[in-house]
Length: 247
Image 1: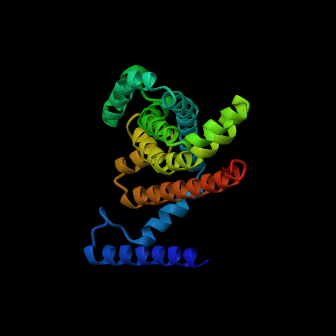
Image 2: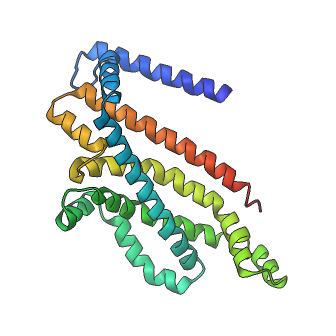
């Protein structure tokens, strides 16, 4: 309860500072007043196009994160337990990680043009190395005594994976989601802005053409709220799952 009060106070302080700056600077193209942003916000929420855009963006975030975890975690588990494989694949992982998002954007536009899957591919390529390397680090930090004890008592392989590997990796999985969830929203929105045909990023692009700063900020605040909501939801669900793997 105390933490919630502090968060609310922090938000109120942020809004007060915003409004003071809006009045002091008197520059609508940079920091519009909260009243203008709120009017745009209520106008957007009432439109079907906005709801469809939210569904499109959320779908892309879910798909990109799912692909990142479904591919990054098993591959990280494999590479973390086999140094030869890790040494072979590490240069490829480093190259993927080093390529700027703008380069992926350009290549995706060349390959697939403007569309739904471009932002998903770009986000996956941006997040995949993080998930993979974090999983490898988690595997290498496993308690070796637990593994030796499991082998000594001839614990079935599937139980070792479920109770030891997944149980020990859970903090690392939470760390992956902490890092990648916020990053996913940012990359998806930028990708939609540049190579998407639907979503909040496309609406921000339209607001730019309309030269409508309050609308840009309204969409930005909504995207931030959606990102925070999904982050809290994922943490809540992971908390439930964590109870199944207590080491």
